[in-house]
Amino acid sequence: MPGCFKKTIFSLASVVSFASFLLIAVAMGTQKWMTGKILCQTGVDLVNASDPELVKFIGDIYYGLFQGGKVRQCGLGKRTFTFSIFPHMVKKLNTSLHAVIILFLILAIAFTFISFGFCVYNAIKVPYRSIKGPAGICLWNFIAGLLIVFAVSSFIAAVQLHHLTERIANFRENVFHIVILEEHFEYSFWLCVASGGTLAFNMLLMAASNIRLPKFKTKTEEANVTAEDIMY
Image 1 (cartoon, rainbow, N blue to C red):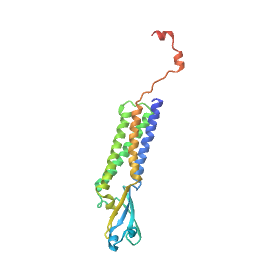
Image 2: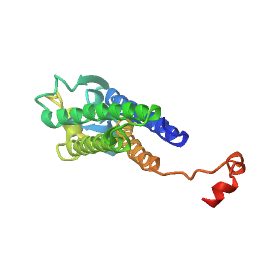
Image 3: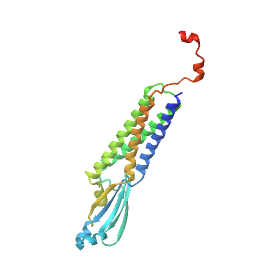
Image 4: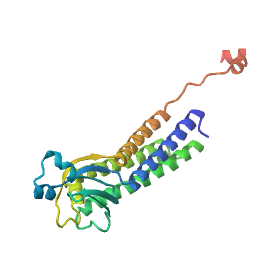
């Protein structure tokens, strides 16, 4: 059986692993990875709108890994649209990159769940193999963290280099051309980043689990020392 200190460390690590698992799952399930302001450039050009009139042509957009929506204003009032990334936008987007992001996150979820299982196992009993102990937990957390870094980096590349927001905003726009005024990473994206932080914290906990605390003798043990014990 592990000592009280190690039980506490591994119990805390199991909570952190499960929290990381939930953070990734919630990030994937929610649709607020990006939000932004969009401008109906075609409408502006048609009426030659000045700065005070631009408000009538500015809308909003939001999207996640699977779904999203936008509010378009082209001088005729607000028009609300919702869309699904799969299968509607397969031809419009860089599908391979988008699929890789999702794959990275699914694998990260799997490894965080493995880490959770190993943490629970170590809290209950002492493993007989090092791969099942702190070293193994560090390995699973490191792999999961690396996958999250790859997923986050790929999503940033899709937004910045492949103009993901603009492509989505112009989906099924045959008459109007939409330009992006501003875009921001939203809470779903930051939840994913936070999950990577929890995995790093878990690795620190595993390093702390190797600390050996000094054992102090109780007064009863000290009182039982005899003269023969002192001679030897």
